[in-house]
Image (cartoon, rainbow, N blue to C red; front, side, top):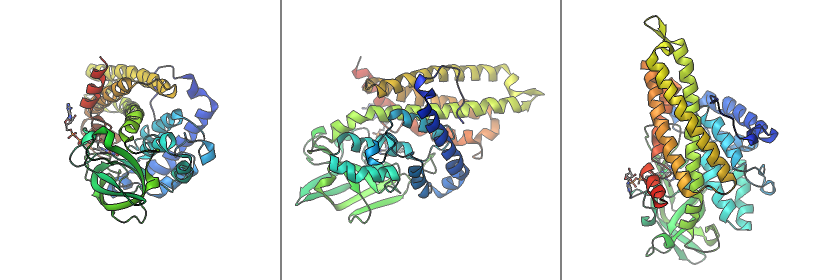
Length: 387
Ligand SMILES: Cc1cc2nc3c(=O)[nH]c(=O)nc-3n(C[C@H](O)[C@H](O)[C@H](O)COP(=O)(O)OP(=O)(O)OC[C@H]3O[C@@H](n4cnc5c(N)ncnc54)[C@H](O)[C@@H]3O)c2cc1C
């Protein structure tokens, strides 16, 4: 459960709507996810039913308007859900990507007919979603992507492959980035909503063997003369994909920061409890000055990061979160997360390296936060552009 740093949280968190949503989300994760995490890690995937159950509880795409079956919330609901999921160490369930990274492409850029068709299924869990940008040849340089979507008859024919796709093993609704004009860079990219059930020319690779996020079915996707209807294009015209991606990337980056923050609070709290119990040389581990100094540093930096995360969340909700600021949050919090996870493993001694201890999983799961969603080097390029 999330360890409460001693700072005043934004007033909205005390509003009844958010308190009730937090209670529901925390109970759902505690009852439906936490007891299964070790089994899911061994299987390399979360149970498919958890998506449908999450839909029943109103946890999928909670920021979608009620007319499509959503709870009519906003990004703050996603922030609350992140605390529940990552604050209980369920880092592998790709629900936040589904809710706050993929679905927003539909709510922001799809036509009314497309929204009516797709949103109810994204909200109920009938669709599990993914976003496919990265290719085996490169992820940082999106403009250089090789996957093509060529107009033919009433639709498009896609060829190419994607890799490292979160929810890739389960997803049946995938936002695919492809070049409709291969001669162009950014201007040649379009986004397509691909409904994969029974789709010819679509296939998935094996689940990738990752260092962490063991219950996440990350995999490769292949498109081999894959035919999709023209109505799969997101937005009214081709060539807008790169701009659509750029519009939504600040939110994706803030989400990674918020996930990192919840993971820090969870493990910091567990570590403080642990060092108060464990003894060496006749003393509690917390009574060694080194432990006190290390935890004082961790708590100070975590507190500073949390204030910044709250600031950025409010800025996003008020539509004033800049790309630079979101990149700062992603880079600073994910770097800090890796540093704090490492200290917490150390303070657990040998038990910190045992998979049965949540700190070990959190340490493994943390590392990728500096890589996905744009590497931290790319974040610094973005920040530097605004100097
Ligand atoms: C577990 C996991 C889940 C993921 N989920 C998804 C997903 O759902 N969808 C998706 O599309 N992608 C996903 N990714 C891919 C992820 O976004 C990419 O791995 C990431 O963007 C980096 O791309 P790359 O791996 O091709 O590295 P490269 O682009 O090859 O970069 C290699 C190194 O070079 C550095 N570098 C590159 N360009 C520059 C530069 N201009 N200046 C300085 N340094 C530079 C990078 O920072 C990095 O250190 C996921 C990755 C992982 C590991």
